[in-house]
Length: 355
Ligand code: IPM
Ligand code: MN
Image (tube, rainbow, N blue to C red; front, side, top):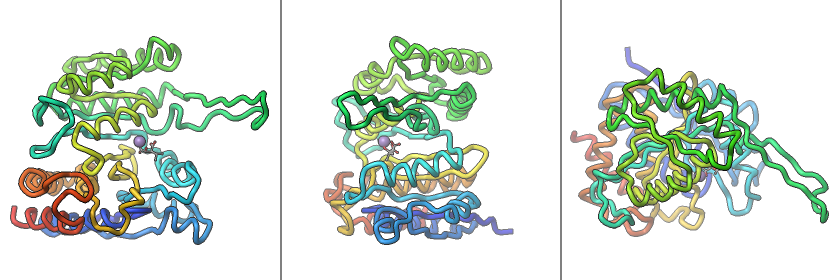
């Protein structure tokens, strides 16, 4: 029997819809080729929808999202909406409510893509960041006292539960083992200052490590990680870290792999429904101009197929991405590709068809 998957699609804001269109085109192509079926249901969520209706993410939309096999997201964020409203109300709400406790972000420099790091090539830049995705500073714990007065106090606490930290660390060890490259897992923390939170992380890390004698362990402070990511990116295989540090170092990671136009991420609930997205944001100034690079969204589609178990189809998307980046695109940046958004989608599709 033909395998079928129900995919919820949230094109979202800005350039989200344009890149998602290309991702779906590629997905349909590989589904046909590898004999499975993808049923896409689109949901209108994001800044435009909020402005028109006042709705952010109603429960009756969250329910079908939670019942689907995966969620494919374009971008959330609108210049007319106060920062935080859509990000917290849609993106973080889905991550938290669906318990997508892993944010997986590959940092891989493909051939033909320029990195700003001198003398480093694809053999040096190939690692994955496992970012905790439901706790830390993102948990929303804290508040104001006497807001707007001279005596005001703002507290924003980092929540680190043993369960949350341990499941993230365990996922990272498993991932590192299955990835089977350097077999090295680096904990990124700040044990010299955040002596409570990262004390817990460090203890959990070395305790779980005992179950993985085949994996080499390493530790570095987050500031040092930023330095090494630029100076010696080849040292890294898998990095595990908390939500805030993971957010920051993966933007740096996106830059060393060539730019936001090609960086993809997966919000994973290993026991539930996961969500896949290009991590570059809504890029409002490029909206509708067909100049944004859809490769990040196409790679997010690849991560989606990997996660739902369609490995052959996922790998053919990666082959397509590798070919197009190496042989076709002049540059990965918006407006400099030498092709329109749609044409880049076509290039990947055509290649995948002929594989
Ligand atoms: C990301 C984004 C989000 C985050 C924002 C939009 C809330 O920067 O996915 O990295 O901070 O997690
Ligand atoms: Mn971010």
